[in-house]
Image 1 (cartoon, one colour):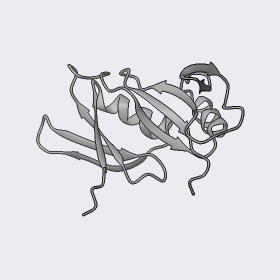
Image 2 (cartoon, rainbow, N blue to C red):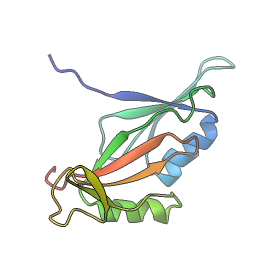
Image 3 (cartoon, helix red, strand yellow):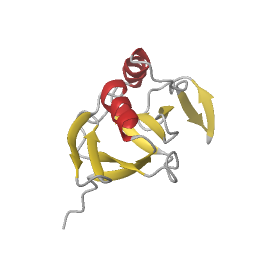
Image 4 (tube, rainbow, N blue to C red):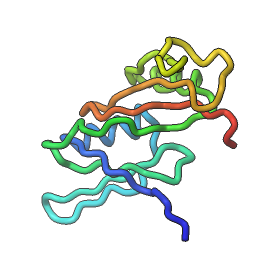
Length: 135
């Protein structure tokens, strides 16, 4: 039996602000924006090329508590340039040597060893990781 991760809930304080960030600044694709009654709204969006989406759920008490979600890209320098070009504050490229972070990309450009971080308007944090060997 296949088990597929297809949706991760990201709690946000303001769904419209979060929707604008993920669609405009991060270039995610809108899957659904549905209201059911006066107080319930589901917004789902996915990163380009991903089978997994995020659900931007209104939850002011938990907004900003998600940490360490990973996005995987083939070219991390291009990915960082794209998001910073759209106004996203992104951390520097880092890689790890003997478990310690060092600034800059992995000198050998090994898969799974170059990253940068960013956060959404609520403070939910993401890591972008380079895996060039994936198609």
